[in-house]
Length: 216
Image (cartoon, rainbow, N blue to C red; front, side, top):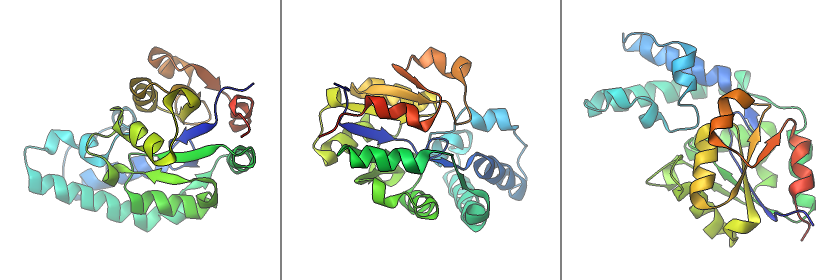
């Protein structure tokens, strides 16, 4: 029998392809505030963590930090619908997971407004029972709190759940909460970059998740 009746999903790089928009939003923000540029690799290392974590080097100036976050969000939302795309097979995979009766949750470091917009754009809202976003927790990924909160909202046990994500932050959060983890290799990171976080499962395509899902 497949092991899991609860599936938790990251958003960016897992359910939607928003990477170029995310990176462009960071570059735009530093240009607007006349701060030294950072390359894509710098921002990629923090993908999957909240904006205030990504901008942590500016945290000693709280007013600047809030301006950076606001500039990022303004640019991101203004370009969101023209730059965000879907991954082949994600909608069908989610439909199959729901058809099996599995519980589902989004666990993302994006704020609720931005997360909901991406889900609506790609037609993914009907497939998710609950959303746990950056606004909903005190300690975001890679802390376990977002995963714990999703399990509590779903009424699920950690041994019955798998967390599907594309970054080491997702895998670390899942391990900390005692759920299984599955690396989504259709996102921006490959096996070499994720191997150190030791996910229990490797998913080359969204359909590779389906054998892990237990019908209820």
